[in-house]
Length: 224
Image (tube, rainbow, N blue to C red; front, top):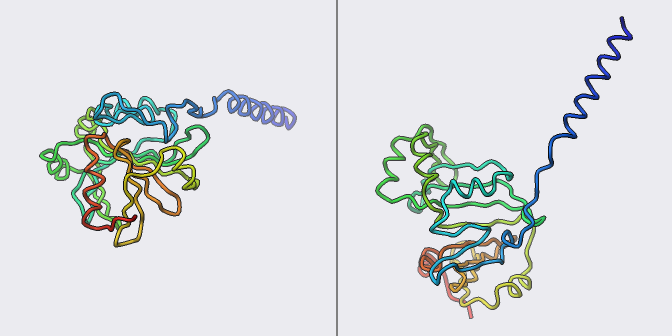
């Protein structure tokens, strides 16, 4: 009897190991399209990065493209010092061996945001603002809308020399008066590189570059 039990346990362990080995490993995106400095412009006014054309690619299309990455989280965010908007983020992606977090904003018309806020299912307060869980109907609406901005936050530090090599000399450098962060602006790329302890990258369509530059004009100083 004990022998049968032991054999049964061994068989169960072998079956479990076989099942684990059969589960495919999470693939790593290794295409040139997923490098943070591979920026193209399908038209003179648009920006394409990570396979996403900002202002055109919908959130649903992005979720399908990166379906093997971490789960996509979507919520309405109402910051304490700025207007609210819908954010979607991947907690961790692995592009070409570079692990990072990606945060996107969705181009939800302003007149729809207040309704989404009022219909919200749950509200969580954070140090930087309020995060609201959207209804299923509002999520469906958001998924059909395009991505307007994308922020790429690598886990590892990217040296300034690498940034200059990949993007060239910035058109302008602006230091925030509060916090001291320095922004390297590349309007020709629709790019703002924020020089933090780990520099991160903010992308917009070229025609929308003012979304990045205008807020800095009043709260920063231009560096030579």
